[in-house]
Length: 328
Image: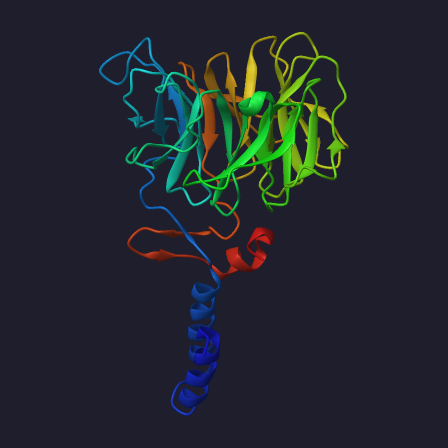
């Protein structure tokens, strides 16, 4: 007997003694809890994960490590302490883990660690480079690019390092998993953004610019992709609809604007001249979050099914579950 069936039976038995309105509210509350698949992690120490090399005692001036900060880019916490370079951190969909790239084994490898920096584990273990990790929406796999086997391509691997598969070959890389888990965006050999299904089929070229477009990043609703391009002679941030329409340039700084990522409320953060800035999705209200070196910023956005925060108490609203298209 499933949980919802038990709820119906209990409601019927109690109907003679409990007012209907109170009974209905109780049933709705239980249904919300029952229909929510996951909780996101209490081990998170912040909202933004990034790499930096601050001066001691916080960090090491000549070495990049992984850090976490809150949504105001304050309260930095250092997570890695290895003499090798650690870069490209990305949150898992539930916020309990972080994937990142490290050179501590003599070449770039994909590592996973807990959100508090514990249990740092190499999941790729390959003598050629492995780069650009991207989580599947269910948190079970990592997409990345690699030159293993002498071919540059996009691979996926289970988070325990097993089940390695190639999705597509002859690409630059920069994979980005769509929020619904059905597609992968990546950069082709000629520097354009392309989308395929997770088997590498049904390829759809979104951009066609000779200057090069890089680092695609999906909006939470899967409708837009942000990326950076050097088509005006210097890196700037752009967006495009997932069907290839409505391409827009968002920044105009004649400086280095790189690595866009979407926030939980639909804004965009990006790496601006080594610091981190934030803006609305249409490019308005640009402001600096951090002026010092903070590279590869990644904002925690709960994946589909990860809409509840468990932090000693259950905090949830029925309207959030009912109205959020990603929870259905």
